[in-house]
Image (cartoon, rainbow over all chains, first blue to last red; front, side, top):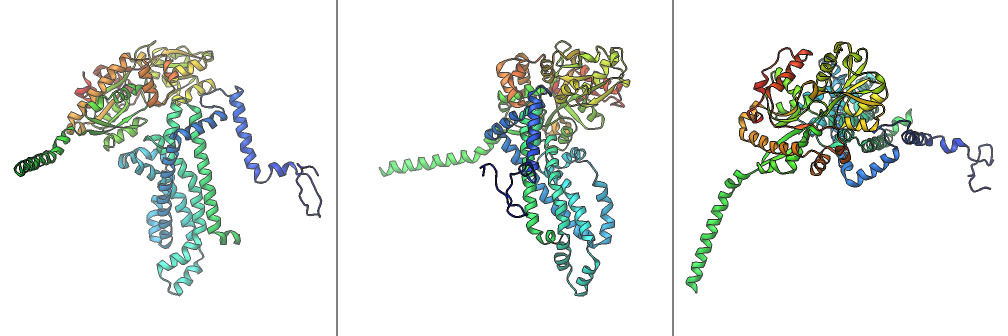
Length: 274
Length: 330
């Protein structure tokens, strides 16, 4: 048996076969190979002269810039600043969205009062809000964290409210029949039934949190990946600019993967029921 | 021995008390020499070179000013930061400041920052793709051009250039393309001409000399020897901190005088490269430098305001002479 040919046992009964191409690049590996192909295309387009621009450096130079940026500490400092703002804004925005979403689900009066305001604010583009936010909150972390929290709030709020409103009225009626206190109803009935919806909103918000943090950093301040990208772009250092974007993308991917793992563990009952 | 010891002890105690007394008084003395903290918004571009020189050469420190530099893109966020006292002093283009004053914000220009000379020493230019056929504003009709921002000095000057060279700027599409992307947009055929400036202008000309060309100077050519950017503070801050503003202007002025005399000096290139992150070789090959100025000419400000009004950015022209604080007059 050739060493390169791994042995797999077919369902038909012990038949040996060589690994097919789809075994090597198929399944979960397909995404990886797709990224490799894109990076190769990027490298070739920059090296062959197909695309000539300071804003399109070869990916190999970007890799070198990642190493230099991390070794010099600048890039790591920028990334850690951004991650801090993302985390702080994410926690504030999502926590307030969950609380408000649950509260509004229990009160028609509160819904009628607050929903129009929330729906008016929801479509506002966050970059347009930054100048007035600067006026009230300044240029530092409070403004940037608020920007992230504002962005995160809406997807989580909408999902929470929708989830809480979709609970069968029987559940609420049973809790009321047994005289379950309001807080216990919230904790024991409303929240568990809404958690899958909340998680859906939280997951969507991860990417938005990164985008809004970087957008805020691009407008003001001297730290974070947003500022780093802008300053490198204006300095004509395309490789350094892409290095920051690459690390940001990697961070977003890692955070999302961690979130999915936590979600699967916490919501095992929900996923197994599907 | 005992007597001597007592005397010594008395002397020591007296000395200690005196020293303690001096020590107790010390904070007041220290208070006089305490550094004044200033948060200053700076657009980290070539125009701000003199500020970085003044900072690096210690002129602010000599004036007992501790500067916290906050990079800013200028424009609206800078003015908002001034009004909310996040910045005590901020750099921006003068068009933004004139607009702010016209809107009722009580801003004063405390020192000039940069100015532009006429072509061929203009550090801003109209750059075209050679095959676009554009030589004058007349050729721009039906074409698409780009400026870094709309309703800013390069945009006004681009319209002036079109209108003063046989064209009609109201019939030309001018879109917003940021400086770093203008070269790609030109070469890719997405725009036909661009209002560029240094260091992007020289980088583009070196990268594609066979495809791009400069057909005119821009800011310093259309409004000769114009001021471009300045440092401003609110009148309220100036009233309460007159001596601080004067100290800032004095320190900046020394940096500006040195920078104006030492363009292309290796020390200057090194310092500007450090603050702007520009590669030094890019600075060494600039076609033109901005003028580093401290004084603001009222006539220059007035001409800009008139141009802004001509192109609909101002309904009425504010009293531009009043915008210039006494520190920026000399």
